[in-house]
Length: 220
Length: 220
Image 1 (cartoon, each protein chain N blue to C red):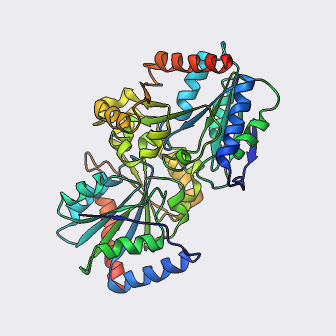
Image 2 (spheres, rainbow over the protein chains, first blue to last red; image 1 turned 90 degrees about the vertical axis):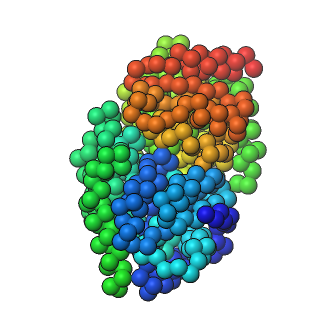
Image 3 (cartoon, rainbow over the protein chains, first blue to last red; image 1 turned 120 degrees about the horizontal axis):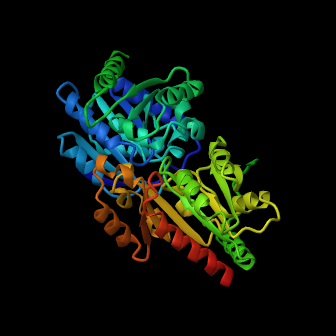
């Protein structure tokens, strides 16, 4: 596992860089997912289970973006998937140039699926196109059902919302219907899944969506 | 309850502005707390219980900073405390100028304690001095005990760490000792409390600290 130190790309044209990167990835048949959520929403835990379930069908790599530490990349490597740890140097998000630098560290191997686990932050990552074809966000039950009201941009730009930690729902006042209604009010096309990485509940539907997205990228 | 729209202060001297504001507040005998945490860590819920317990002894106001919505300020006003809702215009943190603008909205009334509930974000708010005399951060049990490793600056700059939602600890793998050791490794002087806003457990110690800090501000 490699650790790389990144700096924010000095460019006013992040959107253009992101569009170029996205086209290159699609031409290679690689789906890049930009995975975003608050700290502790369960991004790495979701990835661990998803990799275990899909690694025999697809060649998968993970890019872990963090302000510091390498705990997440170490967890991913234990599953046998290729992982690179990107340190953002204090930055609160990844941009297209940083994403390209992290992808370069993965080397020449061809991957069907690369997941960028963005910095734990419900605000800044929503503002920067990384070049990923799909944006997937997590919201965990302990965080509360009011989050679409308070962090609207993240819900607006995401293709998929995964509600995580559903196994602890009995211990929290989380109104699933209210949360979904608020998310769809911001983004009528958002796909919503409910999962528990502890019990495995809901993973079938999420992984079916992911598998379809990987196959569609190859057909493009 | 008022809602104000803020913009980032155009100044290179945030630290100087913060120092001036801090001195003004101390001269007035007002303690300003900068309360920081991830989205959904329980900032508003902690405040609700703290206000209920202390409002007969102190004149308390709350400034709710959010990217959008006014749900938190509405909750605080229901308790009879003065609240102002500050919209950060997409910004991921509060700075000293924004804090001063929000304080101005509270009017001429003298407060013993003003709490700035910062934007839900474990990264950016740590980088900006708001002028508060004390910084208090929350980490909730569902977020995980590895957060000091991944978001070190927040733990480094905070005077107090409150571990919240301890009532759900049986349903999560949260190692309290490991978390405290990691936080103290970054910041040997950090005061640590463990609370459950649901059961009230641990509030006595946290409120004793807060009461002492309010009294010390008056004596300065």
